[in-house]
Image (cartoon, rainbow, N blue to C red; front, side, top):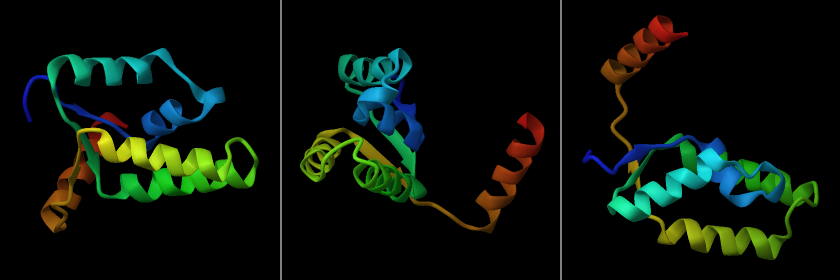
Length: 102
């Protein structure tokens, strides 16, 4: 990772996407990445979580299917890098971090 890079969870992406969940913090992520030419690092599960969030938003009429399709095109243009290095060692480290920081 370099200095302009950020790690994001799916709630940030959904805040970019759902009008009633907009947040200044999520908007600052996009600004920071664009100003620094950084990357947005996401865990592999991120894509599934975003897909689920958008599917639920369409089902509940919070956005249209066309909105969802456009959002996927926009996500595709973002400098998103998926961290896919998953193994027992990483699981152990994650559990320790979760225990340490609650």
